[in-house]
Image (cartoon, rainbow, N blue to C red; front, side, top):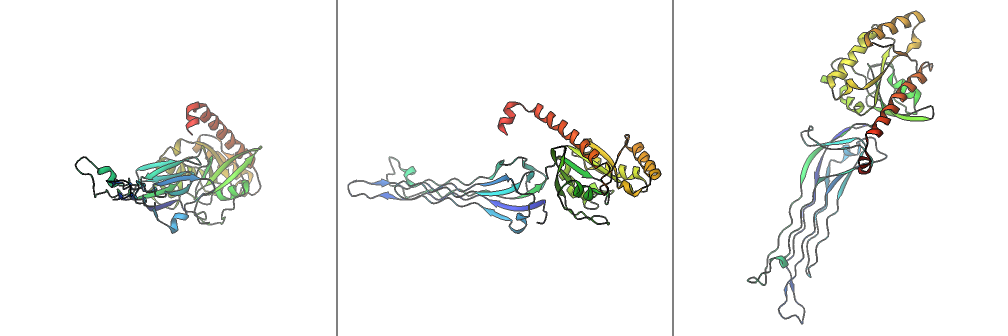
Amino acid sequence: MKFLDQAKVYIRSGDGGAGSVSFRREKFIEFGGPDGGDGGRGGDVWVEAVDGLNTLIDYRYQQHFKAETGNHGMGRTRTGAKGGDKVLKVPVGTQVFEEDNETLICDLTEVGQRFRLATGGNGGFGNQHFKSSTNRAPRRANPGLEGEEAWIWLRLKLIADAGVVGLPNAGKSTFLAAVTAAKPKIADYPFTTLHPNLGVVRVDAREFVMADIPGLIEGAHLGVGIGDRFLGHVERTRVLLHLVSAREDDPAVAYETVRAELAAYGHGLEEKAEVLALSQADLLDEETRAEKQAALAKAAGRVPLLLSSATGEGVQQVLRALMRIIEDDRREEQADDTPDERWQK
């Protein structure tokens, strides 16, 4: 299935049904009278987060969504039925923006969350509402109100516990493939990864979700390369795994380049907890490995872990470091939740 994380769609709620002009004509009711029913309300447009979806690809092939018009009123004071609602089903983590693609309407972060994007028009009054002492046989009824319409943007931000960042060919996809059942495309050229990949990591009988995004290069926050478009997918993560390839001539420069892009992008990415690792360490001899590890440690202010996805060296150590941070963050989150807040969720 092709990955699509952004889509522009048109929505319109249903118009209200028209009221009815009708009169009672029963045999034994001498003067009869108006009995036109009201029109039914138009259907609403909702967006709902559902389980089992991880892309917005459905909205690539259909961009227009309209709720049903309310049924018209009928005689004998019969009110028209409400028009059927239209529900846009989206993956968990989807944000809805107005047409300017900046004004946030809602953010769906849990399965089952719903939000009404457009309200259906009210049905019109039938002629029974216009009866008065001076107008005993009104021959007027209201039309239904029109529904609401708008163009909106759907933007998906994957929900993962850990996100993997680094320059192109830092070994991010190889690491994801080594520790999960995900099967990302892996090749020895830049920007092999064209869209984010998700995988479930199991370590010491515990699990967490990891996201791998396309590589970042200098100027990514300004649109250079493709990584900037997907930085939003690691906004929700609890921890970042920063991989620096051992093949880099200067690991310190590679590290500082990615950190600068995270800071320039903003949204709190530069403040997230980070596990740093020198990847593809199996390519180096012991002396070169020590030199590059020292250079990276000087730039980062801490000693990086050594990692080789090919041989398995350091993999468990990295996973356990990520798991510790994730579990600490989960405990803090649970402690911050009051009983009322949990109930509302």
